[in-house]
Length: 236
Ligand code: TMP
Image (cartoon, helix red, strand yellow):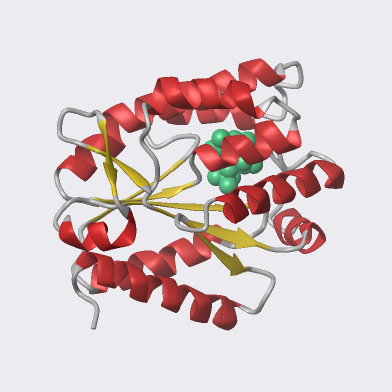
């Protein structure tokens, strides 16, 4: 069962994937998730190119961030100098950025029929703040309900890979942000929380083995892209 926004911003229920085809013409909300160094950025470009080639109008954005306010909040969240930030403050900042993002960018785009691809969304809060920091998921649910009122991604692509490989890749990029400085055990908890969410919502999640070579990862993505093109009404 998927939840999608209606014109007045309230959530309405759609009966799964068949119904997506019936609603062709409305924007779709696709999120990309994964641990550090999972290759989301490279694969996001691949996905963007494939969908744009098919004539789908797209907005690509990210969390935390996406809006001017959200990007300022992102700066606070990622700044390694903010060592005193409490887990609650961190979680509330994530949702403050998200509330602005949904209101200012995501919802208006979807209402216009533009598809939105978002690099991370609320699953990241369950994985990082819930799994990583140990925040009670029921507290996250309260904020999720408050900020999103049932609004959920139509499809979430989880790029999964062993933590060690991801950290090696992320480390090679240079300066580490406040999250990238965490210990391996933190990222193991993040990974497990993501996999757990994917397991419990197979209708929404597609899990990609991101530990493989780029070509093989993109082959996995091709299958998902085919599915998305069907949803858009431009598949076979
Ligand atoms: P990025 O560098 O992949 O864009 O993500 C920024 C960092 O923010 C990443 O380490 C994950 C973290 N994050 C959370 O902890 N909770 C969230 O809800 C989101 C969206 C990101």
